[in-house]
Image (cartoon, rainbow, N blue to C red):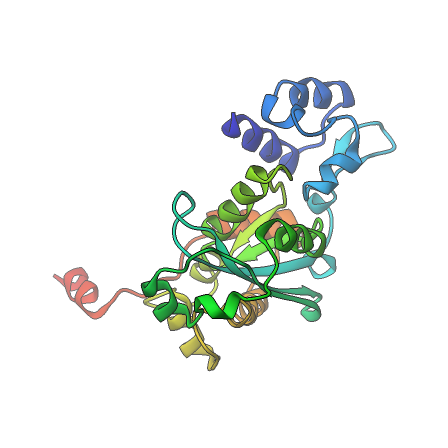
Length: 265
């Protein structure tokens, strides 16, 4: 079912749909109709997807035509106590930017009943740090209001986006439908490097802050995102151009020394 929803959103990212075709396709996605009324575009926006009905009656995504410099991007990072089936979110950090300028920050610890020792050693977050922290439902509700319908950006976006989306759905808030960009994918297409982990890119750009804390990692990913934007080719103009470029453009990865030797053989 999720594949059908993803295919539908990808279709909207490429072309406007006749209103009746839009409703027919949307109403055929049970995962969606269980939580929203598809004809109510405000409902889509509550889930993070901005849609508009054009003068010709067609349903369209404004991100198809909006200059990416005018778009609000929300760069996100989370720390968790384990995987999606064994742990939960224990910290959320996010930075909002528009036109390369910061317009907001979000940071919160999240109450959890237990943090494994290895997670505490990795993040520096211990059980006593969570005393007085909001419960997951309250933290995610606040974060969703902050995120709104901005474009969700993260370093390895699949992890952060899906962890948050699944957590929201489990709490009865519905999944995320925000457009998203992975800074690893974008960096691979704009920055020459042998490695694209957050630590490696922080070193390239001289970003010095504590690793494995949500807001610090979001700030680092934000700086990397801005560096990538500076290197975009001229033909990337709209938000959807940027998303497509991040997924399909030629990569600039520099082979490691051993790989370079193999290429010379």
